[in-house]
Image 1 (cartoon, rainbow, N blue to C red):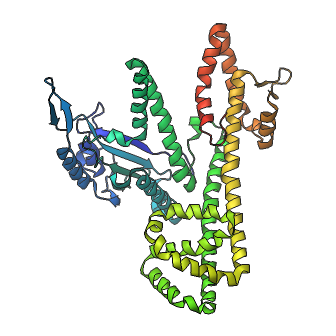
Image 2 (cartoon, one colour):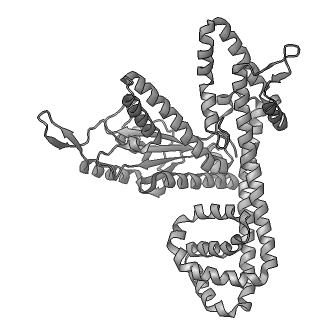
Image 3 (cartoon, helix red, strand yellow):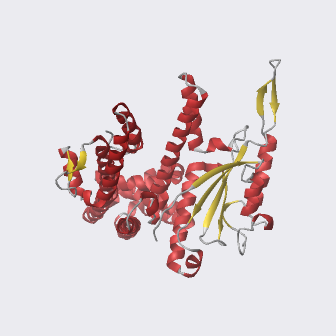
Length: 468
């Protein structure tokens, strides 16, 4: 499974917008009310994934709006509390569509498993992003692709502003406020605000890609969006598949390590009679709740991680997945962790083998999924900037050969074998810029070049660890 994927956020008011969309229309369409489902050939009721049904979302929304209000200043200086205007955006929605067709997901077990994995990653991302403001997630199965709808309410905001739940909108308002404070007029402030909105929206999609799409073998964008050739697009999809496979293999190997360590602890129990009672209590707790079992495994692994720094990265992954459990049980399991540490000293040789396996997993993942990808992206962006400023250009004697002035950049591009992959894009950029600069006065060429290079420099700034 591979393909482009993104999460779309949009807010709505009780008053319909120019496209006829409103809170009532959106929720009625989600419920597949007949008058709002004419675009679907054979409408089916939605499936509830999380929270409450769409009809219940409408009730919660109306109660929230009825209880909300805004403080206003009257002409005589007095203040009064007024109800929420109908044109205020009071409902935030998030929509994500799966790239596989609905018929395939419904008939193929592997496709169904891919979809459910993607759906679970989406739900985890939404919960982490919106917390208890996420009141409902549903899925539709009556269109070409299965997709999910999430509904978010500003429940703790008396002004009921759903726009404030959108990080991009928050960035826009902050940028406009800063611009006005710096003396800019409303037109300039709006321009700066819109730029901040787009930048934050791209950052949000990048975060969604890293935490959902990448883990499910999906790409960030499609081939047409980036003007990729068939070979380049196939390579991109294969890389996304490989990334998901590596993630799944690492998860599986971690499970094997945990299972092996469980067997080690059972053998140690016979040698550690002084902690038999505590282990029995732990076993009983693990049988009562899977959450307690996960926490006990984390604590048992902590002692081994203390002996080798490389295991700290695996612990960080486990901490992220089990943060709530850690807060509830850290104090309760501290004494047990110390006892288990002493018991493991008697089987140090076996524990060392497990630690080495975990260290190798950590090294493989760090090298394969982070450093190489970040370095390749950074070199491509630097090459594009070089085309604009003339430091990267085709050789006049042989246009198939590219001259790179910066020795370090040339070696990095050669090492990653990137020139052959992106030479067509660089050639198109070089030809376009050459033709454009010929039509511009010399006084404007530098200004236009900086404007064209601005989004590339912005992308470079977002590359962690590689600020120019």
